[in-house]
Length: 127
Image (cartoon, rainbow, N blue to C red; front, side, top):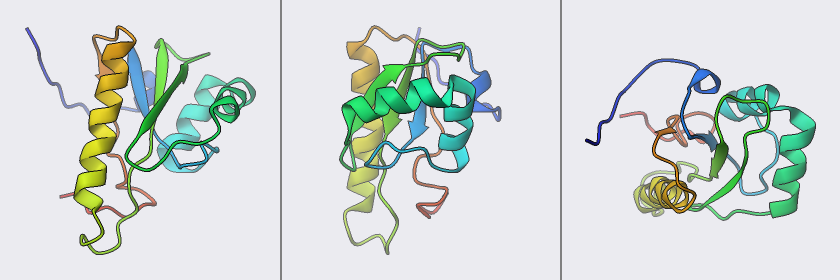
C-alpha cells in the first residue's frame, strides 16, 4: 500500500531510504535545509561527493550517499527561483520533484522525505 505522510520534523531526523536536499545548481553548501543536511551528514564528505558531481541543472536531481545520516541517500534537487510565475517556475518545480522520485526509484528507495523545495531562499510561494 502506498501512503503519503505529512510531518513537521527536521528532515535530518527522518528514518527513510532517502531525503531530499533543496540544492543549488553548483551543489554547494547553502543555507536553510541544505545547511542542516550538510552539517548532519558531515560537511567534508558530503561536499566532496557533491563536488564530484559538479553541476545539476534546475528541474533536475542528483544523488549521493548520506554519510552520517540515518538514511541511505541524499537526493539533491534543484528547484527554480521564483520570479513571477511566468518563467516556467511551475513546470520546473514539477520536474524537480519528478526527477527526485525517479532517482529514488532507480536506486531502490521505498521511502523518501521531501522539504518544500524552492520555498526558502528561492522565494517560491508556499501555497
